[in-house]
Image 1 (cartoon, rainbow, N blue to C red):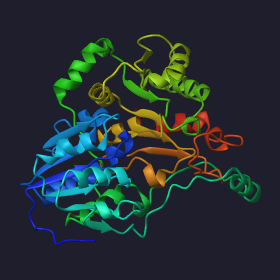
Image 2 (cartoon, rainbow, N blue to C red):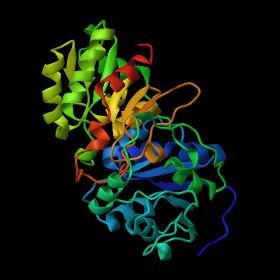
Image 3 (cartoon, rainbow, N blue to C red):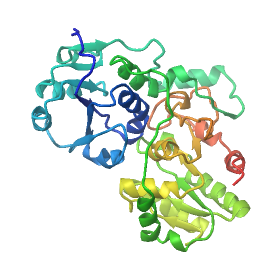
Length: 372
């Protein structure tokens, strides 16, 4: 179903995605929409946990937040009186399209998916270059590792056509925006950085500051082993005299509480897992010369804030969700190329070879390549 779009909408609503890393990867599309419609009022409907991500972002004029326990009627009511003339639905879920439908936005665009097309006035066919994140069954994994020897460790490359940012750029292009990619971009003010520096006592540290993010919400298959993080961090510290900031949420405290005493006490290692707001996390990442991390939300935050990233990939694919390098910024993306990777499983059903195959020495070498 489709309708003719007015060439210059006055008020555009974007239904944002629900996860931190995905939200960061929508920023190129949002910037392209701002470029296409410089005079439009662009609002973002976003989960409350992500609302602060968009503070002072040049692509967004207004954020409308909702909580995880709110129903669709409550969310629709927040939108209905704001007289949006066009909406772009970024998630693929039926619920996200239904929210916009119930709000009465007259023009509603999103990807064509079962059970939701009736809620949209224009559907966009899936991209021909899109790659699905299909979970491999255990039997398929065992067959793959039996047929192929495991290749040597390599740095991954990111073919542009398959990356997740193109999913969002393709939708923005359906509204007439430029589909050419941009690196994800986020912004924090200098006063925010200075406030966070003082609050967490980093103004008293003279050493170079490195970040370490050992967690990943999706599951253990995305996490490089804690003992390997400890060994790599200690060797990097020995060669650079850095101070480590340990990042993460409250669910990561089990890991960071093991890592911090093994590296050393303040100022050698500062455990801030579970202690920072989203804006404080962004500000503290800006103080880091590099972030060593698994494939997770803070990885995308750091890259979008123009902080070099050493990203370790196991069960997931850097070709789909890796940090994007540019002429100004280079990242190190490490994966072992185990034949069963990416499996997109939360837990490894065999011997965790994708992560165990990434050596401590390779991670240390990647850090030192930044000439820190």
